[in-house]
Length: 150
Image 1 (tube, rainbow, N blue to C red):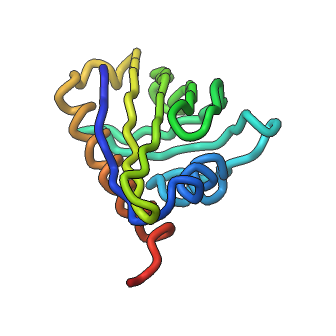
Image 2: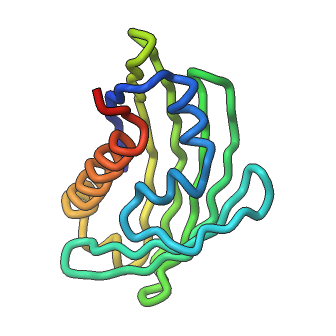
């Protein structure tokens, strides 16, 4: 399943980039994420709880930064296994920033997500709706963390 979109943030691109590379600050914006720990400066583990349609899941995950070229190429891979269903999830995410103004950043993202196991039975429409709701909440929380009142 492919997901892509844009998030506009009223903050300078270097501040947004630094935020994306800070696992503690970024994970605080993702609903259900907890227990984030650094393996090294490019790899992190944690847990995420989420509801997907009628099912709840609790994934242990591993996230790695694979590319880091400010401002137009941040690559991240993620993989995880749900504790209950043993469903697996993998994702490759590409992020780029554009700064149309000094205090305005447009973050574009493209994610290729694969889910296998019982959660995959729910179908792409339900998975896409759940992912869309989560991305919307992440965007809202990122804006709150980065934008200065004006």
